Structures are given as structure tokens and as C-alpha cells.
Length: 518
Image (cartoon, rainbow, N blue to C red; front, side):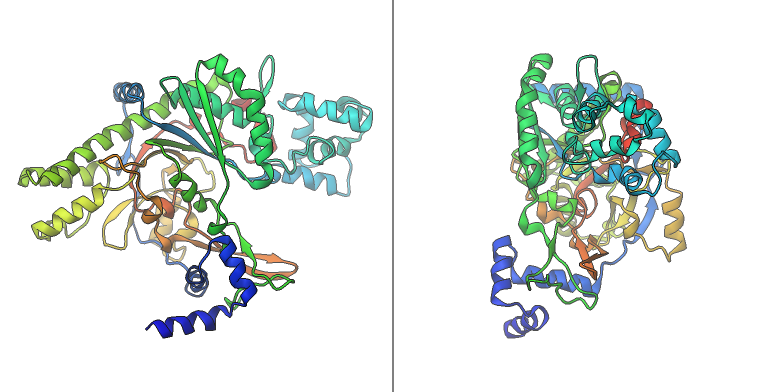
């Protein structure tokens, strides 16, 4: 068996000594590389669905009275001195935000022509970065924005925003861009996340915020924090602990040719690509926290609209604490051995109705098997996910899906995980009532206070293969199970309906002109 395995690795990967050193430097084993290449061969199975989640099927829609109770639960928890962290994926460059502006700069016309271009220049004074851009235009062109536009030199304005000798917004990460205007300043998303942490994720005057960033931008983030953090500490009366991490080289994935052999660069080395946001489960796993809030870098609003965000983050956290208290109590009861038939029935109901985890044959299990099953399903990380009503945004949604062991649980699924040839599944997807805005509160310690080893709860069969090219050659790229999809597939998951006012992403620069960002 072992000899056969070695031959398989040698035959499929054909690694040179140089390539062995290359993967060793990344912290990737031959076996891991072989498994990645196997994924290209086999692909990933579509998930088997039971139903789309809704407020009548799994999604919690708390009343105003219940919201108040959950907020009180969260505030009591904070006063107990637990370690709370706000975790913000912030490594993505903002280049996609400015795709239409790049196209304008390269176009064979000089004045705004498309609706997007007309909107951008017509309302340019409303952008929080207007003053900084005006200053850049004066330095580069000797004229301000208004003068340049009056003479028809719109492209000079756009170039001053995008290019490295101007604001360099075409290459900076979203977290570094000026999003919102205030009387005395313009704030970046990084700063807005610091403020949010002070409002709902601080404990006993301490606020812990962790950003995942790219290597090339880390110094910029660190400099901005150093420049700004003292002002926010004074303003909100909290002490910030701001930390950064990068995706680990060991989470990169090998690229493949169209015949599933390793893709090699012109210099003969293997081509590796970042494994996607699913790689961040490793960064999340490194945190020494009790509770972690997860929210995308661009989903922020100015202070005048933060009340809803603060309220609902506390509601989600209170729901998590309630579920965690009950889960821990049941696990301690199982440990004691001092339980009866009614206790077991209560645990089954809790799994089924609160944690939305069920199994058709649960009543047929022998007592010992049932206890093992209950312990396994209860002793897992817990996440509470805010979901909004579906308004046509692209992305995933909440579904009840089957797991490899035959159980059904709540999952956040992307369209790539659904068999488009299955009309019933497509109906579920297109008629789904809710959308996932990446709004999570996570409990990552067990009932004994030990940290969960989060990578153990990843479903490796939920990755994704996409098609790219490099140097004119087609290739296959492998994305790891997404952070809030397959990477958290084996967590206990609760879904909660939150208002649309808490979901304000910035996908294009003109989104900053929406009322929610003014």
C-alpha cells in the first residue's frame, strides 16, 4: 500500500528537487499537493439540498422585545471580561471598484459617455476623497478638478485618482480609501471598523481588532493605525489592540494545466495562487479569543447610520451567547452521566429547532450511538449569521443542506455549489428569500474553555475550480472551501434576519454616492 502511494505521487506530480524545495518553503507537503491535483481531476460534488431557509424554516426573526433581551445578554457577557475580537478580511485590492474608471481612461473618447462615467464626474464633489484628489490634481497638473473638467480634461482627473503618482486608488486596498466625509476629516473603512469595535465589541474598556492584509500593503495599514488610533481611543474611551496577519503561504494552491498536470512558470517553477478567503480559517484559528465578529472591510456606514449596525451586532451576539450557554450545559450533563430519557429528548429538540441540525434516523439509534451523535453535534464551534432579504445582490444564501453523515444542517451556499441542471435546486436558489452579507458572530471555544481547532471543521469537498490564464496559457485555479461556506460547514449555525440598513457594501466607486455613504 505504501509503495503504491509513493509511486502515485511520483507519477502524478513528477516533482523535481527544485520543486520539492519550493513546496517545502511554502509549508506544503507532497501529499497536500497530490490532493490538490486530485481535486482538479475529480472536481467537487454539488451539495444536496433539502430546502432554502426562510423565516418559516430556520431563520430567526426576533421581535423588538426579544432584541432587547439579546442585547442585555450581550452586555452582561461583555462585563464579565471575555476576550472579544473584531476580525476584518481586508487584503483585497480596490482595483475592481474602479474598473469602469480604468476603462474610461483607456477609451477612445475624452468626455464622460456612459451613465456610470457621467454620474462619477457629475457628483465628484460628493466623494469623501474629493479634497485629496483636488490636491493631487493641483500637484500633477497645476490645476484643480473643476478647472480640468471645464477644459474637458476629465482623464487627467481620473488618472490622478488611479495612478501611483496621484492617490494610487487603483492599487490600494479598500481599507485605505477615504469612504466617508465628516466635518473635520474623511474616514477610511479601517477607521470605521475601529469605531464599530468600540461601539459593540469592546469589553471593559478594551477593543481588539484584527485585519487580514496583503504583504505589500501591511506597512500602509500599520502606519494608518499608528496615525489615527490615539484620536479614536480618546474619542470613544477605549484602548485599541490592533493586529494584522497575512494569508499563509501554506494555504496557496497549485495551478493546473487543462489536463490536470501541474502548471509550471516559464522558469520551471510551479505556479501557486492564493487559496481564496477560505485560507483565512487559519488566521481565525490563530486568535486567542472567546467571541469573534466577522465582517467585510467595505460594509461600513458613517456614524449617523451606525445605530442599526450596533443594535443588530449585539442582537446576533446575544443569540450566540444564549445558544452557547445551553449547548455547554447539555455537554456537561452528558459528561456527568446523570441524565435521563427526557434530557436526551430535550437535546434532540435543541439540535433540531435551535441549531437546525437533524437526522432522519435519529430515533432508530441505539442509546450509546445516540449519545455519541449528540456529543459530536453539540461540541462544535458556533456561529450566528445575519442574513438580509434578497434584493438581487450576487452571492450566497442560507440553505438546509445534507452533510456526508446524512444529517441536515444550516449552510451558506454559493451558486457554484448548486447543480444548475437540477430544476428543483435552481427553483430553491432563485426563489430564496434571503442573502448572505457576511455578518457573523463566532464562538470558537468549547465548553471546557479550550480553543477549537477550526481547520478540523472544514469540509474539504466544498472547494471550487475556476479557469484563468497566465502568459497566454489557460490554467485551472483551485479555491479552498470559502471562509463562511465550506470552511465553516461543520459548525453549528444559526441564521438571523437583519435589516437591509446593516448591509452597505461598496463594489464600485459610485456606490459611495449612495445615501448610505454620504
